[in-house]
Image 1 (cartoon, rainbow, N blue to C red):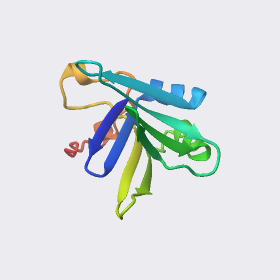
Image 2 (image 1 turned 90 degrees about the vertical axis):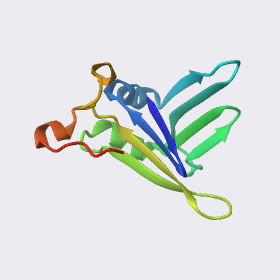
Image 3 (image 1 turned 135 degrees about the horizontal axis):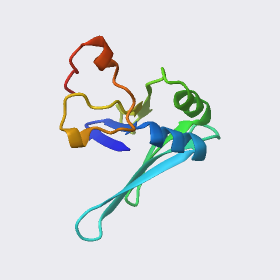
Length: 132
């Protein structure tokens, strides 16, 4: 699972194996170990109750939660590429939350190609990828 953080946005990208695991268990969590004792855990969980904050950051853990109905539709339909939410911030503004299926890289180094990635639609369209 890839984590991308930019000003006022958080994005998770999951390959096919990770989407299947998430669909079967209702959560997927990864850990990044940094020098020293620092650890960052991040993940995605299904939430079945009343709507929670979509993002929680505390004690070295960044957790995104999505409603069960959204998770089920996203995980089971190939044409459902992403889920997009905005979480209001205290003092104004919002945090953009993006959960997406990860496409296979088509122009990066060979070692970056994830065989479990979703087929990239740009391969069949002949279009060049847009740099993010």
